[in-house]
Image 1 (tube, rainbow, N blue to C red):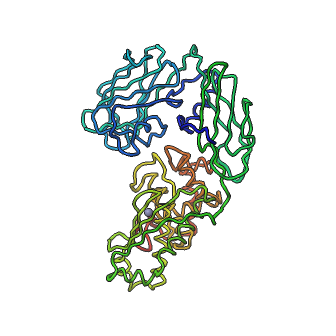
Image 2: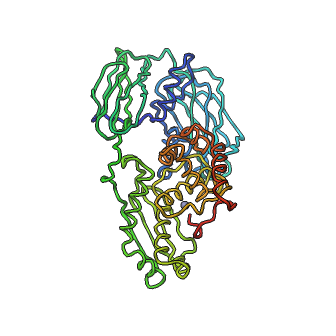
Image 3: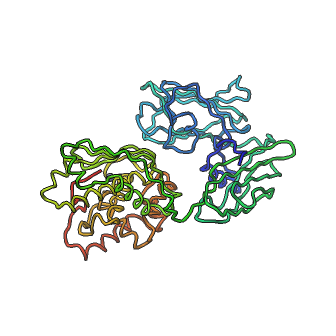
Length: 496
Ligand SMILES: [Zn+2]
């Protein structure tokens, strides 16, 4: 498709807008979800933390500037009256939160009307959304936030939302649509629903679909081959029109297609050759071959298709004399993993070579799961006891167990579903008695549930509360397990 313009609007907005369109009493809309030009006077944001993050509907991404003030200007699609707005704090360093600001409005960018002012504001939490009401009933097309912080030379905000009503006297149309589904396997039919305003003519373009174009109001389109496809709608009246283009809107996945699996480019370095590292080489003469086999197997456990994988392009793998057995750093597409050669030497007398190889492979399964799994957003930090920790470490040990590098003799009663490692892994394993695709669905919920929690994930997958499931699991364990413990010890010391 050649007419792809830009991602002025985010996919996530559509659902929210669609809901508000369907309400009988017209709900307020976040006008930043439509075509909205957002600019700031700060040109020093780090990569990935630019001004676009302010209106991307992701409260876990942020705008950051190396300055204690910032002027942010919004040009919205057409004139509107704001009733309220919200500001979401960043994910770290509360001193960078704005503590005071003004909000001004204009129709010519020359004369500005003050519509709200705030001072001594304190965000009590990270990623916290604070809402402020606006009394001014004027209709405007431009808005300007003049923000400052007093405790830092850095200012950051995750999100700004401007809620209001479009000015009904403004005849400019708004192109808008939703669909009954966006992502599916093999082939399927997608029903599109038009939500455009001030428009009686509709021209649709469906990349990869049949039909490829339509002038119907609510067309149904068939997709037959795998790929990511753009959808464009031009909606208008006799004089004016508006265009919305959403790239990669429809995703048709292949079932499996594992022959298309892309192995990471692995940079393997044994840093302790001539010392403890020699023993690693003896046990694993073909390290990259092993890594590739484990990568593919991890993905086959976590995903149903190569089209879903959280792609890992580069893997730096090193053998080092470090106290921790193994750990992973970085995030896809580029991660690093180290493995301790001194640990191997320490275990050499107590374990056979086959047992040591199993340990190396098991740890590799665990760490590579971290490389490929999705990361839940808004589920706390990497700290034992958080939903985030339980998800990451539980899934990683589950994948290791499924591959045959751990066994049920380590399963204990007690503990908590958020303990991570084996405690959570065996719980995840038991949850497969409720749904054979549980770990696949669990990993997918990290994309769909924001903020993520075990409660929301088990409700979505199994329509049950996580605490009820945990209780049932404990009852199931009791007659079969005699030993009581906290359920978290490892056969080896813990890797992260
Ligand atoms: Zn781990």
